[in-house]
Image 1 (spheres, rainbow, N blue to C red):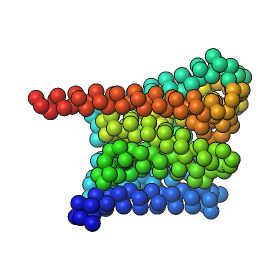
Image 2: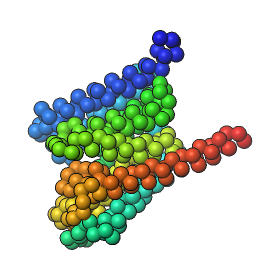
Image 3: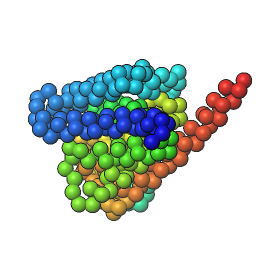
Image 4: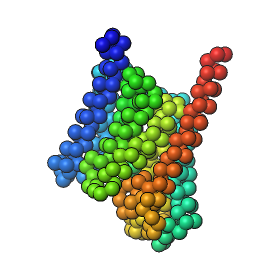
Length: 287
């Protein structure tokens, strides 16, 4: 093995170690320690997020020798990118809803208009820790280190597969979903990775992640939820599972073909924006 091979394998090894350690911690928290009072509810999500992000920051600072901002938190366009991520998630999940309504694959049982804004804000607070730690780990650390050793394409592919397979941890899944979830959630990871590549920043993928979950599951109820558990629409899924996904689950449209098509559309749009931003940066650097 040449010196270059050894040098390129080191960041790959670091990324692999972080994924394995994260997986172990998540299994412990969602398994043996699942009923521990400090780890239950929203507080538990935030505690887990703080722990995982702090561990990722320690890997970055102590093992990589880089500052925490290099994970993707330095971006002069951060606020604008965050808004773009929220908008894109709304548009993609809204498109799924419109197609399902046109096809007769979703039945609206009612709407919840009282306290809409506070409920949506609560949903955002619930999704914020998940989006922050998953994007910091998989796009901020794993993708970047894999890219150093394997190049961008392999880094996007492998970090997304790790993201997809990781969603099986701590969840009770059976039957066909065991095989579908890693594939479709890997495609979702590719979309989030494409969002990171636009400016090599985490603001866009974090916002897109939050928006995808909030609008898809709490506002538009694309998994089919009763009125008491939604922010706006209460729905019942009536379409074929292969298209609409798995009702009353953590995954909903993410394991259906409509969800996959939305992910692919989002990925193509983000890659187009990435190329445009890259060309603009290249022209600016030549001046």
